[in-house]
Length: 176
Image (cartoon, rainbow, N blue to C red; front, side, top):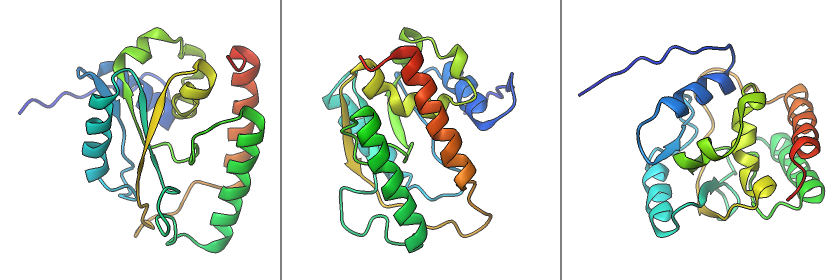
């Protein structure tokens, strides 16, 4: 087994994912939260779907099956649904769960688009790839579990920053 340590060039989780994705050597890249809210078996399902649809982005969605988002508190589900609805209105997304940034991305897309000005928000830029660049995407159902330890970073300020970045990216790239 070969283990390679990649040193992060800039601070923040987006920069860590950005640097790690660019250092990856496979055909597809995906990230999974260390808090184990995501089911690691979903990665195999995403890769299987990606093999059926080369060049497409494959995302996981908590909204394709009833109950896959049920462990979350009602208040968090309400705000998530409201935010998803706002994004559908703003960017006309057809993704059912665009804020659930658990996806399998063809590595070649990382080289096709300039993400250098969105390193801090790289995870969001990946989620918006299908909308901004009209790239085909496919979704698989995915159950999310409540974390057993630690606290969520998803606050009102997080969603406000997410929304600011959506406007910035649409202003820069437009809706193609």
